[in-house]
Image (cartoon, rainbow over all chains, first blue to last red; front, side, top):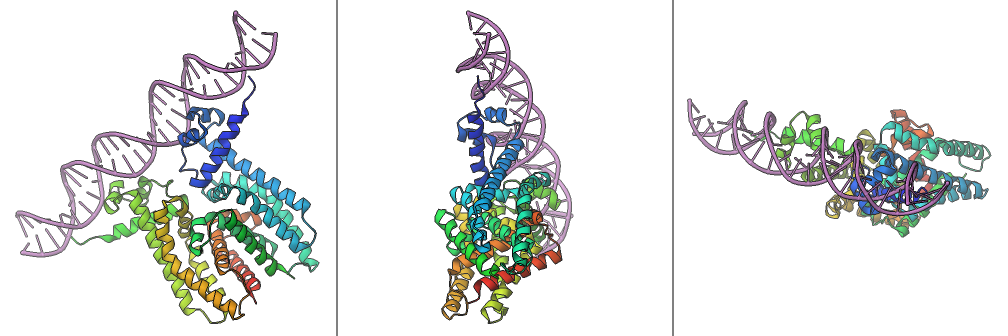
Amino acid sequence: MARRTGTRDLIRERATDLFGRWGFEAVSLDQIAAEVGVAKQTVLYWFASKDDLVQQVLARTAADLAVVVEAAIRTAPDDPLDRLEAVVKAVFRPAVRRPALLGLVREISRLPAEASERFTDTLRPFVDRAVRWMEMEMSAGRLRRGDPSLVIALAYATVTGIATEPEALRVVGWNADIAGLRRLRDELVTFVRAALAP
Amino acid sequence: MARRTGTRDLIRERATDLFGRWGFEAVSLDQIAAEVGVAKQTVLYWFASKDDLVQQVLARTAADLAVVVEAAIRTAPDDPLDRLEAVVKAVFRPAVRRPALLGLVREISRLPAEASERFTDTLRPFVDRAVRWMEMEMSAGRLRRGDPSLVIALAYATVTGIATEPEALRVVGWNADIAGLRRLRDELVTFVRAALAP
DNA sequence: GCTCTTCTCTACCATTTGGTAGAGAACGGT
DNA sequence: ACCGTTCTCTACCAAATGGTAGAGAAGAGC
């Protein structure tokens, strides 16, 4: 019988949503199995352990994010501010389509250092590239001078902050739905443009 | 014998840090008790249940945060951009000194709606005040026009993002030491000023 | 000293957790 | 028809979870 990887994918996808919504610790294998419609032991057949499942969910998420960023960079316009806007929007897009992904990001700091580093290592090449690019544009006078690392750190902190505090942000009448994420994304774009214009 | 509330406070404080670091679900009563140095049942003597403890931890955190914001508003200078800078710095400081407090906030979305609303209700008056103030300054042409709610949401998300993800920010070569925090805070202030100048 | 309240403990419990053992069903290849 | 691999199941298990029962220590007030 051919390997029916459909079950495996289904488990990973459902687990991604559950982990994002409730957190790794709060979701049991029984819950995941019930959600998929199989027995718990089927989950443990496809994934060696819960930790293994967590790791694979994160790896897939990081890989997907890397693909999105890569595509955005490749097709982005040349003007620095337009380019920044395109990348910011690209990073937001998967989150807008599937808010549970934002919940996953918030879980990363709760993992053993080794596991969280595996996630950030996936992003490091992009960060390094972005820093070099910004330094170049700043030297050319096409972006306001500043420390590229700090600018990127701020942007990253902002995105993860949004991911981390959807309920708290509700206090300002903001909703973590599609429209709300879109509005916040546009405001962030406006901020970045105003702050980095030369 | 007088009520020895010291134990109660100690349990609440230690639980605050543990919940903030690992999440409500991930921390057991045994862990909390071990951290405090008492038996698990002592925790259950002071707090009716784990849910009760969670609720009290959140209530105290919301109250403390309200005090900080109140003080910052009262002593801030009058010029809009200076005022924003002062408040951002004031909120930034305790948030960074005790990240667990903000880790707590990230747990709110995982609580029953009733419990999370009790938290945000504490902050709502301040947010409403800030929104009205920004609208006034925008009308007076002393701040760039925009949606005050979104600006506040963005700033709040950024500050909490910094406090909750210091390890992840290392991906851009940033360090969570005093100097690093100061640099990031100053970059944030620069951002806010540039983005909101009329 | 006695007693009441306040406080912390040991002992225990039902449930749930992640995980194992191994039987048996469902196909493809021959 | 048969076999071997792939896949999912029932039946368990040890450990940890939140929580209960109730004994006993330790002041405060008399």
